Amino acid sequence: MFWMLIVETIAKIRRLSRVQGKSIKAICRELKVSRKVVRKVLRSDETEFRYERKH
Image (tube, rainbow, N blue to C red):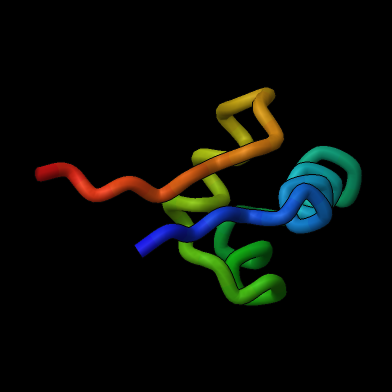
């Protein structure tokens, strides 16, 4: 299965965290994404994330 965050969602996550000072948990609830996804976005400067299965 292929899954990718859109750039707008990444921007929202960064804005909610850095500008509005919201917690990861609050961002997860608001945008309906996992904590793992939010942490990944906040740690990285890239704008594209992909889900890949490991075999």
